[in-house]
Image 1 (cartoon, rainbow, N blue to C red):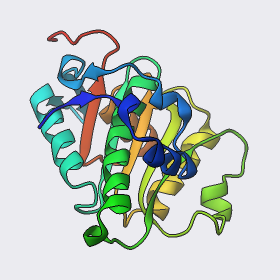
Image 2 (tube, rainbow, N blue to C red):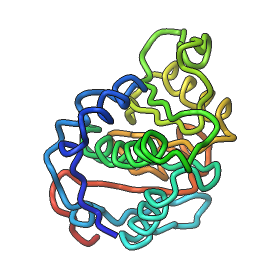
Image 3 (cartoon, rainbow, N blue to C red):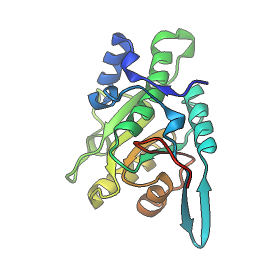
Length: 205
């Protein structure tokens, strides 16, 4: 399966649907790149046990998710040590694949639709607290605008959303740290799938 990330080639009709479902414009602007060149091995220590996540494992998880985004409820953390743009583009490739199936293939009818939610500061969150009627039933949730230095309020919102939508697949786009460290130390959640991306070509560590 190809792991070329190229959101510039998304057809206009699909792009309009993605924008209506909350996808930020900025993730469409990421130049085309080959994912395997930017996946970085990482590790994290918990209670004296070191977990090492190799690029091959991460790529396999990505390919599995891309093939069947609605396979089952899961938490997928896609992170980068820099800004979120490249990680967001990868999340968008999955979101777009699911949306295209729902839009173009009538035999793939599913309950609900995907939704992309950006988390902002302040004490309220429209998805957590209001759930506007225009959003409708959600069968796949992407969450972005999260960083290692996000405020406690934002982290609390992200944690609450993960529990509120625990019965659907969730992707989190995170900047400034590796996915396991963020999930364990700030959300106290165990991710099912992870991806750690560098801005430059990856190197072995």
